Amino acid sequence: MTLADKRVLLIVGGGIAAYKCLDLIRRLRERGAKVTPVMTKAAGEFVTPLSVGALSGVKVYGDLFDRDDEQDVGHIRLARGADLVILAPASATRMGKMAAGIGDDLAGAILLATRAPVLLAPAMNPAMWTHPATRRSLATLKGDGLHFVGPNRGEMAESGEAGEGRMAEPLEIVAAAEAILGAGQGPLAGRHVLVTSGPTHEPIDPVRYIANRSSGRQGHAIAASLARLGAKVTLVSGPVALPDPSGVTTVHVETAREMLAAVEAALPADAAVFVAAVADWRTDGDAAHKIKKTAAGPPALHLVENPDILRTVGTGARRPRLVVGFAAETRDLLTNAAAKLERKGADLIVANDVSGDVMGGEANTVRLVSREGVEEWPTLPKGEVADRLALDIARRLAASGEA
Image (cartoon, rainbow, N blue to C red):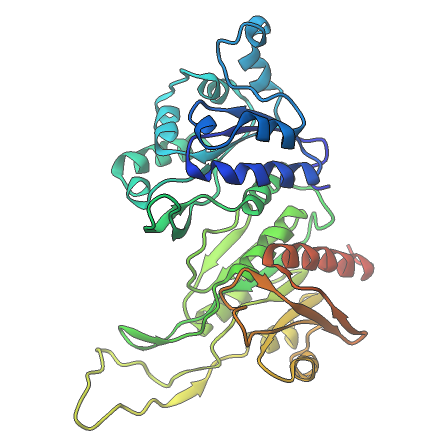
C-alpha cells in the first residue's frame, strides 16, 4: 500500500490514450490511493464517465459551471484537497494552455489553483511532440516545477506512425507518483542502491558496434521500484530507447568500460543490482574511419575481453552489503547461475532463460539463486518482477541487521 490514504486528483485529458486511465485508476487504488477523477470534455469522446466512476468508486467531475458543485467554489476545493494532481493524457493543447496560464474549464482552473505537485503524462503524435510550440510549453512547465513521465517511443494507436509520443504505461505513472509522494519513506529509506541496465555498445568503427538485444526494460523497472520503496537510486544505463525513471539519478554510458567507471564513481552503496547485459568482448582498437568493403573480403576483428563489472564490484574493497547479479542464459540455466554466484562474489543471482523473446519483451520468468537454494517465480510482467525483487532486496538488507 505504497500510496495509502494519499489523495490523488486524476484529470483525464482528451486523446486516445485516455483508455489507459481506466487501468491507472485501478493501479492507484490497489496501492491505497483515494482517486478523485476529473474528465475534460474531450476525454468523454474516448472513455465514459460511467466507466471512470465505476472504477474510482466516487463522483466524476467535469463541469466548471455545475450549479451544485460550484456553490462552494468546487474547483478550489478539488484543487486544494489533493496530495497530487495527475494529468493523463496531457495533450499538446492542454500543455500550451497550462504554459499560458489559461483556466477556461474545470481542469484548467484546478491546475491553476492547486498547491499540490502536478504530474503530466504527455501523449500525442510524434510530430506534435517535437513541434517547437510544444517544446516551448514543455520547457515552461518544467521551469514551473511540474513533473513529467514519458512519453515513450512506439507505434501510435491513431495513425500507425512510430516515434516518441506514446503515453507512459499505467505502472510507470504510478511509479512516478510514488516517487513524488514517497520521498524519504518506505522500507529502503536512507539506503543507496546502484542499478545497471540496458546493453553496452562496443564500437568497431565510427558507424558500427557490437551489441545485444537488451531493451533495458527490466533494469529500468527495478530502479523505479527501488525508488518507490524510498531508496536513493543511481541507475547506470547503456543506450536504450526508454525515458529515465522518475525519482532516480540516471547516468548514461555507452561502453562496458564507461559503465564500470560510472559504477565505481557511484560507490559506496548499500546494494547493487547488475541487470545490464554488458558485452563480454570489444575490438582491440576501433577504426578511426568507416571500414570499407574490399575484394579481399571481410576484415578480421580481433576481440579482447571487457571488464567484468559484477565480479569487480562483488570481490572488490568497496563491495556493497548486498550484490545482485542477473544471469541471462539459453541453456543449463540453474547450473550456470549457481556457478556465476560463486565466481563473481554475488549474494543473489536472478536467472532467466532468454531463448525466447524475453530480451525486449514485456514479461519475464525468473528464478532467484542464492546459497540458500532456488526460488521459482511465475511468469510476470517485468514491472511486477521489479516490484517483487525490490521488496526482496529490502527484506535482505533489513535481515542483515545493519542500518
